[in-house]
Image (cartoon, rainbow, N blue to C red):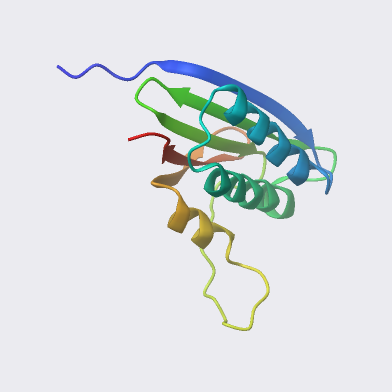
Length: 135
């Protein structure tokens, strides 16, 4: 029987609906990864945090609300990033027009992360991605 990996480190923070929240989420993530001694894939993780936080602000956070960023590093070296918002639970990837200046966020997350998905929560949803931080 395979044992499930245990959580080694966790951190979370709530951000208000504010354009500065994306930068603050990146800074929080950078500090957590540095403190945990996991510099591997930092640029990929930070870009995905930016995309998920931006999507939450644009599509999932009604006025007067915010989003929750959770980081969890397991003993198997997998980092899970989750952004919880209170918007509708359905998400979809855009049909991209090559000239479009937006709509690439989830495609970027899908390309950089090892896994990603959407979970239900009430109200809203949780969009997550995972990274193997060490070999």
